Image 1 (tube, rainbow, N blue to C red):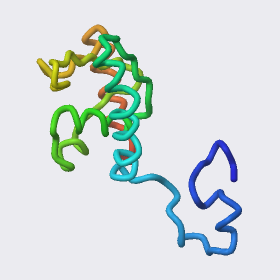
Image 2: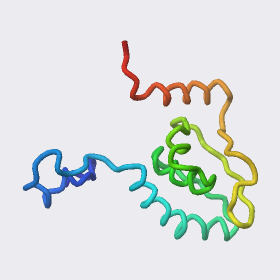
Image 3: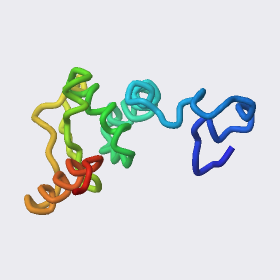
Image 4: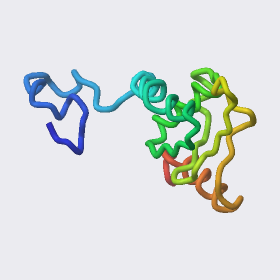
Length: 126
């Protein structure tokens, strides 16, 4: 398959299938199922060891972590606007629960513009 396109449709093992018989992208549910084991197995031990951890990830992977930390519903996480390229800070207690709401790092104007850009994605331009 194409390493730049890890979807099943780019994998030669599925070459005999017709277009439309395989997914072309990963659902949020799939992303969360992939992200949470990484969170639990790789990130949590680092945090418990007292380290500050920086996670750089795609928006849906971050949604999986945020959904887990905040205990958000599927509907709520779909509505959450995570601005691209704006760091998010969480402070966690001993049980790894947020002690206060997520905080975006950046000046208000930069964060606002990034959120507007995300909100505009997928909207039809007139």
